[in-house]
Image (cartoon, rainbow, N blue to C red; front, side):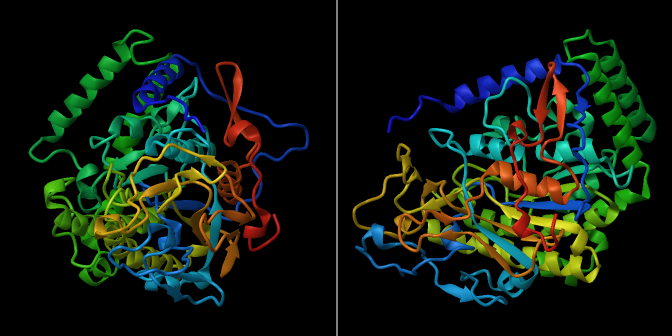
Length: 502
C-alpha cells in the first residue's frame, strides 16, 4: 500500500495555518441540541485523571500479554509476541505482564479495554496520533482544535474557582517535537482561559504558583500591569480576535486568583510525608529535575523519569482533592525515549513498568481511601500499541520505520519496536465504570489484532464525556459551523463499561 507523502513539516505547517485562522474567530457559542436531546446527561464522575503513556505503549508487554518468548541469540523475531511472562491479577481471567504486580492487585477496581484502535492517519507520526487522541480530530484541521481537557473546562467549568480546571503535569514543551505537542496542548479556539495550566516538573509545582524568587511583590505587579497594557493595546489580529484577547486577560485573572488562594498549597508536595512520597516514587525526587532529557546519561534519566511520573500522580491526587476538573499526568513524550521503543524495547519497558506500577496502583488506593474513586475517573492510555513485525494495521500496512533483522542476535532488537494501531489497551478505574471488567478480545497469534468489540477514538471519547455528564453531540459554533466534542457528533458511549445503565 502506498503511504501518503505527509511529513512532520507538513503537519506543523497545517496546524500553524489552523491556529491563525482560529485566533481570528469570534466567541465560540455552545449550540443547542435537537428538541428533547439532553446535552448534559447525569454524570457518573466529577473529575478525570488521564495517565498518558506517551510514545506508544506495547499492549502485549503490559495489559494484554501473549505467549512469552525469552531472549535467545539467533531467535526468529516472528515468534516473539511478549518479552515478559504474564502474571495473575485480582480478577480471574485477567492477566497482565510481569512488572505490573501492584496494578494487578487493584484490577478488581478497574475496567480493561484491550481493543482500542488508533486512527488510519497514513505514515505514522507520534504527534499526529497524540493530536488525534487528545482532540478527537485527525490533523490538520481548519481551526485550532481544543484539547479534551479544554473542552471539559469550558463545558463543565471549575469545581473550585481558585484552581485551574485543566492541569497538565510532566510534559515539557521545549523538547523534541515540542512545537507539535503545543498544537493540541491548548485551549484552541475556546481561548487561553480554558487551556492547560502546565506543570512540567511535579517536584517544583509549588514554584509554578509562587512569584519568582527575589522578585518583590511590587515588581511582580508592575510586570503584570505592563503585560496587560501590551495585550490591551495590541491591534486586533496581532494576538487574535477581540474574544481571544479577552480570554488571555481572563487567564491572567485566574492565575492571580490562584496565587492568592490557600488552594495553592495543593501544588506543594513537601507537605506530604516521606512515607507517602516513597509509595508513589521510590527514592523521592533526588534526580527528578536535574538531567532533563540528557540522552548521554540515559540510565540516570530513566531513574529520574520513574520518580517524575510517580510524583505527578501524587500531585494529581492532591489537585483532584483541591477541585481540579481534568488532570493529565504523562510519562513524557520525547522521541526515542520512554515508551518510544525503537530499540532495546524489553530493557526500556523494565524501567517504564517500574515507573507506572506503584504510582498507578497507589493513586487508585488513595482515591478509594478518601472516598473519591467513585466520582473520579482514572484513565491509563497511549496513542497506539507496538509489535515486533507489524507496522500499522494488518489490512492497511504502513511503510516500515524500524528495521527488524531476520535473526535477533542482540538485545537491541529484543522488544516491540514497530507501531501497531489495530489493538491497544486502555485501563479505566472509578468514575462509574465496572469493576473487574474486561472489554474486547484480541488474537492470540500475530498479528494480535482486534477480534471482538473494537473501540475507536470517537466512542472512547464519548464514554469519557458521558461519564463527566457531557453528551457526545454537544458542539460549539466556530466560523459559523458546529464543532462537536466528538468528531461530527458521531461518538457513542460504550454502555457496557458503566456499572449502571446510562
